[in-house]
Image 1: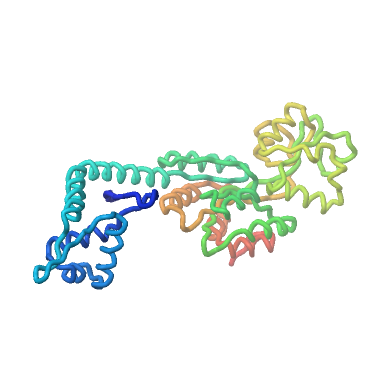
Image 2: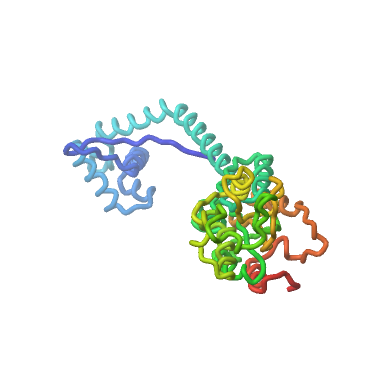
Length: 355
């Protein structure tokens, strides 16, 4: 980045600091070169009246005449005017190398700052192990990556405000997922957003083998200690939808308002016997050796703004393209990189089908 530095001259007029107009110095130089105010005005492409008014204004402010006119001998600088111009030239000459060196360093610093900013990537996401893997992939690409777990709805709100470069969100499939998906997909825009599939998983009840809760009704009655996910997460939205389908009031579940921010956290509470059951992801339950009863299938997507740094978009796209799925052979062509319109159609139907 090229930066140019120059001098600014100031004086005090009636106790106030006033910057001397650069156009005055240009006019004085033209008069000194041509010996004529009319010639100087034409050189600077201003009217004679404007040039004369500029001189008169600064003569009043500086308290000394700048020009002297002699019959038949043109217009010349006064001793004061010539001294002002000479002082400006001497100062520029004396500081030229210092200003050039400072400008060079400032330009280098700005380029470094811009390059550093381009390397920074902020991800806001719902909890999923694959978003952590995406973060590691971007770090390996020499990016400075921060990851904030805020739930699906929170992630998309961060993204829409411009506070996140990438947002990760879960969408449940089936009839239950329609209302959840409609709310979250409504925050996306095909004109600006590129969507990629990261994961497919099941949500359901997790408990210890000696308890083995099989259905939501087992959570009611006050004897079972439950831990929930935080409001705004797709898991919480899905769980609330299931309760509604089964006619179960939140108040019937002991611990409904006890909340954690990740599937790992709720599973850990179950295995440590701090609670008896939780609703979360199958992989977290299997990791801790818990019983798991699947109830809903969901998809995990990331969205990247099309205006984002192209290398960031490409790195995210490459990562997603390399992911392996058990049913990869059966996946539709647009299932890995769906448009927003396709997402709306699919989750309105509740399942994938050919376009």
